[in-house]
Structures are given as C-alpha cells and as structure tokens.
Amino acid sequence: GCVARSCAGDAKQVRELLKAAMSFNGTAVLDIISPCVTFNNHHDSTKSYDYGKEHEERIQDIQFIPKFNEVEVEYEEGEEQIVQMHDGPAIKLKKLDREYDPTNKWRAMELLEEARKKQEFVTGLIYINEQRKTLPEVMQMSETPLAALPDEKLRPTREAFAQVMAKL
Image (tube, rainbow, N blue to C red; front, side):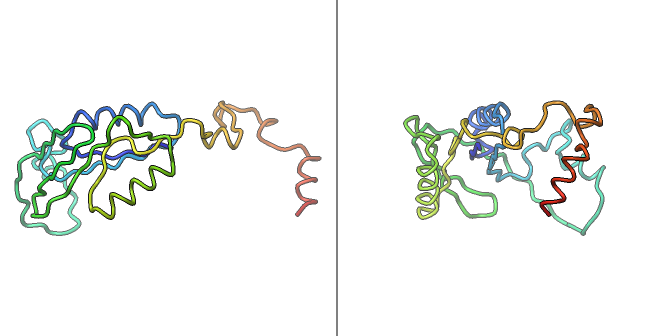
C-alpha cells in the first residue's frame, strides 16, 4: 500500500504526493486536509459557488454559505505549523523530515499514534510498500480483460467442474 497525508494549502507537497500515488502499482490512500469551502470559487471553476447554484439538485435548504480566504501553508520538512480553520479551531501540522523511512510499517503506525497523542497531523509520505503484490498478482489474474478471453479460458472443463463439486 501507499499512505500519505497533506494539507490542501501546501500545493507543492500535495502535487508530489499525488504523483507518487498515481505512479504506485496498487492501492494508494491520500488524506488531504482541506479547510476552505471556497477554494475554487472563481468564474471558470466547476467547483465555484455560482456553478454549484446553476447545477444544484436540492437535498436540503441551506440559507447561508460564508466566504473565506484560501488557506495556504508553507513550511519546511521536519517543522510544525499551526493552521487556523475558518470555523475557529486550529490544527497542528507536522511535515515529515527526509530521514523518515516510509517503508517501515511499524514505525509508520508508531508515528501516527504519537501524532494522535500530541493532537497533530503528520504530513508527507507516511507508508509505502512497493514489495507487496497487488490483488491481480495475488489472484494470478490474466492481464487480458475478461470480455476478450475465449469461452474455453472462462469455463472449467467438465472434469474440473466435477472435481470442485466432489469437494463440496
């Protein structure tokens, strides 16, 4: 697996973590802390307030959405930064330093537990295991899509089917 976290305001780190996740051969989980509801609120954005209003499908009646400035953070590896959220509370981010080894599963779990106790969010590449086989590799799945396989590859022979049924 591949596990990472960042803050939406740290565009450089988010960009690098997205590249890592997209190039990872397997499941990648990214936790992006995004404190700003008006981040892409401009005329050309499909995420803007105006676009949303024009394309809305009402589920409930919301009368007021406050406008906030974009939260941006920039801090170095190994440093901590307090980020003020729009609704009042603040969170503490801690960027992992270069010496941190994201291939050590036990250290990653320990790191997250330490951060939980300190009430901080570590950011960066928390864990990666490039040696672990992907699900298709474990299941020995064909690289050919099922729709392209001939019937004889998809259906068991009568003998193979009889053996399976005998075991049941």
